[in-house]
Image 1 (tube, helix red, strand yellow):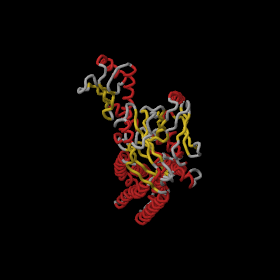
Image 2 (tube, rainbow, N blue to C red; image 1 turned 120 degrees about the vertical axis):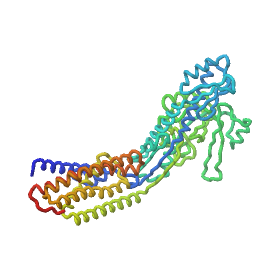
Image 3 (cartoon, one colour; image 1 turned 90 degrees about the vertical axis):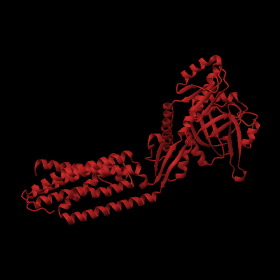
Image 4 (tube, rainbow, N blue to C red; image 1 turned 60 degrees about the vertical axis):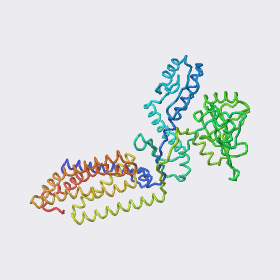
Length: 533
């Protein structure tokens, strides 16, 4: 054997062993393959969701906070004004400020509220209209998506889901999130946990008013409008007998004494009656503020509000510092889930479900069986055809094809790619594409043999003439596959990944490995007069 041929054989054997060790370990074991080949949602079973963050909520919250800050700033500087109100979710009106201090107000806005564009309000004297800058608005929206992704990831991690996919989806301006959770056995519960905003607020209840049996009853008490700085919130009472369930309305302060951001931890527990509840501990800063607020409001009720609903309104009997408890007719599972979402933090905005799909584990197993069956049938048909049509040379193509599949599986294992059902379809397609290159080479060799060339010359010429065509077809296909990967969604990307690595492997096996196999056979006797092709 020639020296350069020996090194080529060693290279092929080395690549083969490295690939087998990559996906099956050494020594090869089936259990290793199951660990290293990651199955997608459609093969393993689980939940696939596409969520859209309602980023208007985040912008709205930014505007609400700015309104309260402006009021505080004006009052602290003793600047009179008739009203500071939100015109819409990103514009604020400051009406009728002290005409003697208009320059001070302008300086205040320009210095302390740089994220807002200031303009005069023409219909009202000494008034201003603030508009959130477009760049800041975009930043708030983008930030809310990233915060939502992190919050969802925190919640999923606490559920113990392995290999979840939580990432941005589609174009940035659509504010979408892709969530794929393989192996989940209780989809309804997981969806509730993910979607729950879990916005916790503790607010002082206005003494002497309510609770009211309805919102209309509350508004009649206040001549049709809610007092400045207050808001009406609903409390839904739930009993074992649905006919007893009802509602109550509380008048509470708009400003929360404590929010979910002040929580250090939350855990399920039971109340004094042995019913499920959630206890929480506060951060150092939150405990300090909570202690001050409760000390100043002893005798008043404290509304514990979750997602805009009053869960309970216990009376403050003494100063409370670093802990509290949420009650509200929870089941044990609801208490566990509430503690989980509180620990992971509140979502910055509501989320809408755009797409939702649940794949059962049995359906995934059926997909695997059918995919393997299709691959085996396709491979068998190709093997029979190549042996029948190209005789012993067909064996050359079969060896190259099997090595192609080994390299492909190893590539998926090494890069930790996820194998999906479209990916299996890509494998079946690759089986045909792989032998297509060999068919092109073999037909070239046949033409050279028919023209009268000897076997060695015909093989060399056949490979050299087919080489450019094979490279051209593979490069154009790889470019198309890259576009599929860049612009495609999950299933399409799975197909593209398999096709990409399969095409690269095919270049190695159909051109290099197949040629080495011919050279190895012909090296024993350079004067071969016949070739089984």
